[in-house]
Image 1 (cartoon, rainbow, N blue to C red):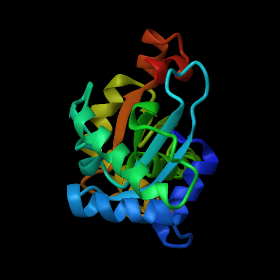
Image 2 (cartoon, rainbow, N blue to C red):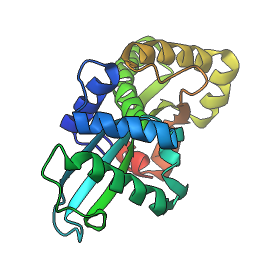
Image 3 (tube, helix red, strand yellow):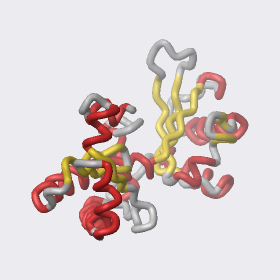
Image 4 (cartoon, helix red, strand yellow):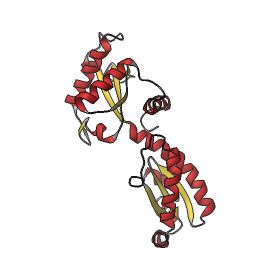
Length: 221
């Protein structure tokens, strides 16, 4: 997925759906995080760091939602190191009696936090957009193409003027409704609502003029 590898994502999703239990350590840690910091943890995993990390171990905390994830940061570009150190220390305390972690110190850990809701919304959108794009291009000749961008998607008309024309005609709203209906069939964790879907409109004309006609360059832009 976005940050998590596919196997870790599937495991976390199954935990979130209630079809797979957490490990005892992760369960105890999630209970502590909820009680002490009102942070919902889906899973927590400790593993050896890969070179060239200066830390011997990585503690990956998979956090359920954006609101709780933001508590681990003081700003968009600054981590809440005091909180993360406290959480690392508590994880090691809980793990001490259940695994071979006695020799690991908090200073040996690098804590990685992942906003699972963004991972899950991205997966749902990628799957939905593939289906939505095929349907839309089959039914609506005015649409040139459709692409996904993480948890947003973009519908491309042919000309820039089409964006206003089809907003006024009601076609764009009809596409929003169709997109939402398809998206909800892939939204296994019920994370999307009509208020937070992200469907944008652009034009082939813009792609040709500013991105050499390439949707790859557009998505990187």
